[in-house]
Image (cartoon, rainbow, N blue to C red; front, side):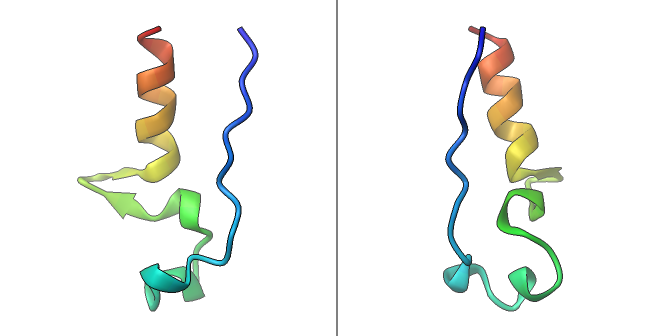
Length: 44
């Protein structure tokens, strides 16, 4: 399976967290946002 994960943008609503990390790497519930998306995709 091939997928495109759109995670573009500056993440201005997540500041000050996005000053040092890109939005997909910000931890939410103990895991990066990108990790949550990849886990959901692996369930398909």
